[in-house]
Image 1: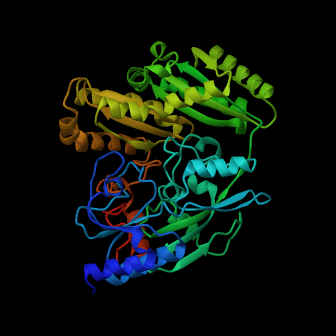
Image 2: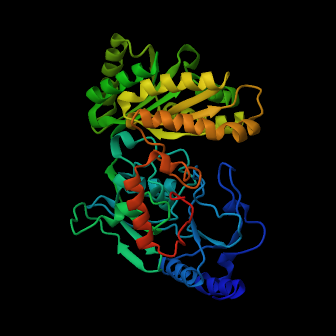
Image 3: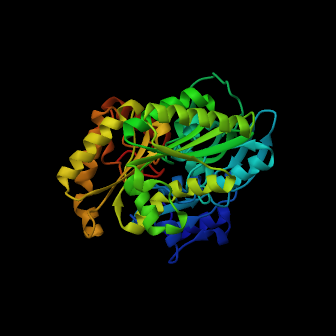
Length: 472
């Protein structure tokens, strides 16, 4: 085994001395976005090409050194920062940011793993197409990270998660080989689906370096509505009506509880949150129409009229302009930021059958209130696809750091047990990372875990790819 010094020299030869960072001043790479963990890397390596990634992986495999892949470092499950040993190589994909090709006839775009999501959206839009993956961190998160975590966002109800949008991958394996799987094929029945194996694997099986993604025609019109609903069950009823009235035009359906919106109103009063004081829940809907704005507005009006008559909506406003629609979406996207302003909190990214969400919320709200008097619940998320961000804030005036330290494990167990009773999952779109790795065996089938460990052993027998993530 080579010394650390000669090993770092090998990394410099692979990517250039300017792109191997060591020593102090690496906090942007070594600390996660939520500031839950701060690690220490042996080196931060910033390759520019897939061949350079492969050379780095081969060097790490020969040296027996663990690799932590990182994109925009916007993840919420502590899955993309090194541990505190000072022995791991952090592989930053940010320099691999090109859009390589756009195939208009095939409705696909191929981009590198470090491509910022917003830049990919813009490239598609400039060519007259829609790339529909959309989430709050889109100005800084990367395509590779989106795929590694199987990101969701606000349009999953129509277009699906990152997995559903991906047709092909380019991957560097744990041995430093390159899998050239960037086909734009929608049908390829030639064996195991390796693409889906790497998507959602959080860098534990290999390193995604590029992807071929689906594009869609731009809608003729997009309209946004904001509605108040008297209960979570009413929100579910409204979702059913929206599916019937809008069909495939329903591209967004978000739910937000009153406390979540009160935090936005408190910390960002300039945003002028509508109607939040009047109702325990608000819903944000988006209708994408391929005919005309007039047709989209007529559909919305019919939907809201039916919802008012059914009693599942008590009031509603429809955005009259693009700027108004953007302002409404900005309110929704500001909830995590407002919660951070309020203080440290315990986040849950869960999914449930939509039909069981009202029962889960009612039962779990009550159980938490009994366990922790004064607890505050920031409940919001993508109701259209059954994904809730069910977050727990300390009682007002409490020491938030002490609350997090003393109560996190108990609260996580309470919430995850409730999720399991209601047939759900403890991670919908944020991944497992290291934050939930110890919890996963309690909520995942032993048979499923056995198969996952067998796959990990087969593809990464040295255990160098993002160790300690997903499988504890």
